Length: 467
Ligand SMILES: *Cc1c(COP(=O)(O)O)cnc(C)c1O
Image (cartoon, rainbow, N blue to C red; front, top):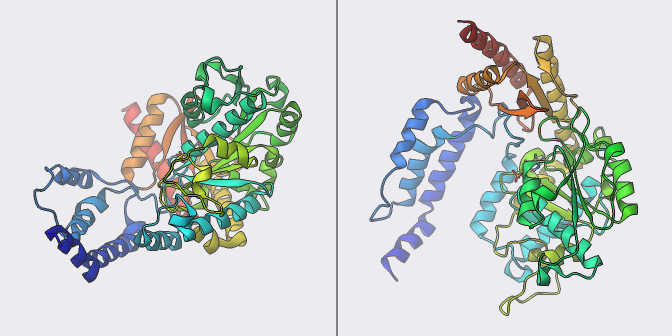
C-alpha cells in the first residue's frame, strides 16, 4: 500500500474529517439566520489566506475542513436564509441537503442503470412525480441536468431534431450546412440563457423572430409571428423580472395546429402548476412539446438541479444520442438517454428527497407561500411610497426608485447593510430593483425587516444625492 493510500484509508476509518465537517456545518446552520446576508469587508479580506501555492505535502482532512470553516464560511452569502432576494434562487431544504450528504458518501455515477440502479430508480420516480405535479402528459420524460441553462438547451435540441427530422434531415449526421430553414420565434423578454442555447445550437441569435410582449412582459398572441412546421417557438412561464406568464392556452393551441415545436422556459414559474391556487397561470402549457425548470429555484433543492421534460421521448433521445463499445445498455430506463452528459452526480437523490419531504401538499404550500410573501412585500413597499412596476402574479417584484445612479446606490446600500440582498436589472429600458421571493425560509418578519431596510436605504441614498 502506498503512503497516500494509507493516509486515505486512515481518513476512511476514523471519520474525523466527516465529523469535523458535520460540526462545522451544524455551526453554520445554527448561526446562519443571524448573519448579515452578504459578507462584510473583513470576511472578504480573509479570503486572501487561500492565495497560497499548492502545498507540497497534503493537509489532513480535519485541517482543510477547519480552514474552510474559519476562512471560507464567513465569506458566504446567506442564500440558505430568508432575506436573499437576488436572481431567483431558493434555499436548500435541510432534509434534501442531508440526503445529498448521504448520496455523496455513495458516490454514484448516474449515467447508466447498471452503474447505479438506485439513481436510475429515483430518476424514474421523479419523472412520474414531476409530470404529475406539473400536469404534463403521461408520456413525458425527464432529463436531470445542472440547471435551466442546460435544460433549455436540451429542450431546444429536441425541437431542432424533431423539426428537421420531419423534413427528412438528420441534423446529427448532416449538421446545419445546407439544412432546410428553421425558424426561431422567441419572446422579446426571453431569458438570456435562451439566446445562449440558440447560439450553441447553431441557429443564430440574429435569426430570432421576436414576439412582442405586453406591459407585463407576456407574449401578445395577437402579434405573434405566423407559425409553421419549421418553427421553434420559445415561451416563458415566469418572466425573470416581473414574473409574468405567457398566455399558453391560445398560443399552444395554434402552435400545435401549425405543427410548430413549443418549448416553455419555466425555470421558476413552471412550479405555479403545482399550486392549486396558482395553476391558472400555466393553463395550456401542458400542450407544449418540451419544458425546462429548476430544482434550485422554487422547489428549494440544493444547487445543481435542472430539469428538461419532453413529451416526445424519441426526439430528446435522438438529440442526446451517443454510443460507444464500452456502454452496455440494460432493459431498464437509462438515465443518460435524456441528458447531454455521461458521468454525472445522482441529482435524483436530492430531487426525490425534496419532493418526498414536501409531498403534494407541502409543494402547494411552498409555492403559495412565496406568492403571499411577494404580495406582502409589495404592500409594505407600496405603503412606504415605493413604485411597484409589475402586477404581483407570482413571486417577483419590480421596484422603481429613480435614475440609474439612485438605483445602483440603493442596491449597494441594501447589499452592504446585510439586511437583505437584491439586484438590479432594466425593465422596458428603465433601471429597476428586482426582488425575488424564492426561499422556503422567508418569514413575514423577514419581509417586514427587508421593507424597513428599503426605507432606510432610500433615506441614506437621498441624503447622499442631495448632499
Ligand atoms: C434562472 C433562469 C434561467 C437559468 O437557469 P440556471 O439554473 O441559472 O441555469 C433561465 N430562465 C429563467 C426564466 C430563469 O429564471
